[in-house]
Image (cartoon, rainbow, N blue to C red; front, side):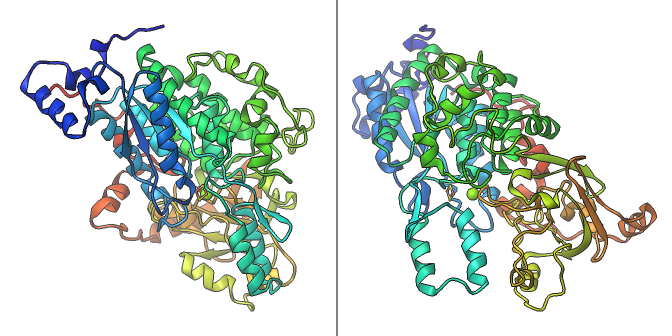
Length: 576
Ligand code: FES
Ligand code: MG
């Protein structure tokens, strides 16, 4: 299937001509210690490595890059490692989401400006998958995604711990006075005990599953635990395969299509995906010119059974169990009839071919379609006078008694204000109240933080309540759960109707009918609209300034408007 010859390589632009510029490039390669035999006429593979000493989920990438390079060399290519912005979920303030687009920009420009014929993208922690993939789609060279893989199951005192989900759960118990300092320390040490991404079906596992289902990883790569020796072998395989992809000229536009984006969305729903997937999937699809909409995702969410019994939407298991049960290939095999199996993938084969022979080894972890964890509704999209452009909720992760609910609003304008109230044991609140946090969207957060799982007020916790209806224009962590309406669009900070809501207004959620409204007469809303004063922009300089002027709203994917594919003409290849 060879389509390219050495003279056709993109890198030949830097290294082939007999001129002064080429002399410069070649002499600098010699400065790096390479002979022409090492790289001239070979596919040059950029290995974009998002390792850093503060990225807990990618701590094994320093070793894995060696495996990738080994694979590249074996297949006759030449690998160069390019350290890339390491957007980590654990430490980044105000929120890693502020930097997803920065990583996407860096990725695109790093590829475009360097003599690279293909790339291996090393990522996994939440925003790194969409960031790397969005940038690489726009750059357009052959790419393969190397997912970091989930960390091992958490463990403390004979109990299995799940990333995020159990942190929230035990924190509520600690606030209720049920957990000692020593126990708390034990949980702290046991909940994250190896390299790798969060091992619940949070944003990281959802996004790597999406990349896998889209055909951007080696088949099933997203399920391999980070510290399994299979992860090393997969890394070397990525290196070997990308070299062939360059010769085959297998570019991302042949892989990311209407069909593969739809496949990715269906698979995400079947895994009980993180709500964040919606935002990233729309942004990734848009980069590839695919018009995936929030409404499409609602329809897929309604009709796709949740068959991965992995927390937080599933009840019992974690990603390590999912891998032992056959992993994502087995899950996709199980629902093959619903997927477009003709889609091309990085293997050069179709999705259908990649799924041949995949087997489910434990049908309690990967359920058959007729015995799902939840019949449908991993994710639902709401509309109404509170969210004219949409909001999302995860029906599978909330108590069904909130699916149709009416109650008085208790509104907070900022996170600190809300935090103070929830810690107040004498707060006047009932389980019927609807807690609302605004100014937490893409502009207001700023950066669209994961504040959407608003803590249950202490006053209610003490009475034994663990869930209530909550609404915000924020996101929530993929490992969170509860009756939380998120991504209200347009956000309040830019004048969305959430800004008009007042304490005591009745809010009504009707999940079966997909509506979310404030029951306030239109004349009254009009008066409030007239009186509304919009807050000042958050940033006056720097990256944040650019962010706040160009980020799109949640329902649009939060990409920068000028990075979207149809914004204008892309700068061509360098001709100097
Ligand atoms: Fe990196 Fe959860 S903190 S995946
Ligand atoms: Mg997360």
